[in-house]
Image (cartoon, rainbow, N blue to C red):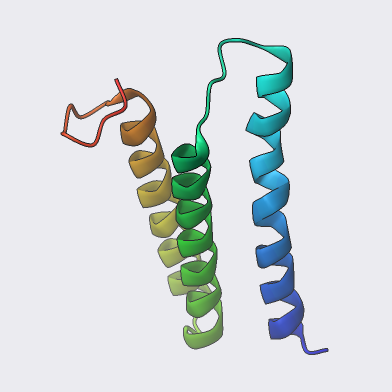
Length: 96
């Protein structure tokens, strides 16, 4: 397998593994209460961020631009996640 396909497989395999964290936490704590929609949204966000980073790594050749674009993607991912979780910006999407 090529490096690109291996990296893509790793991205796709890491999403369910990351979603196992809140699933396991729900078994041990009443403070973690995720529903099906929460898992679907989190999976979509992780998939979108992962595939966008994969696209950047495939198409952008200059290392500095790669790093900056990947950091920007991660920053947007974290901001959207935080907004959905606790509403840091107070938009209609906030979870609180």
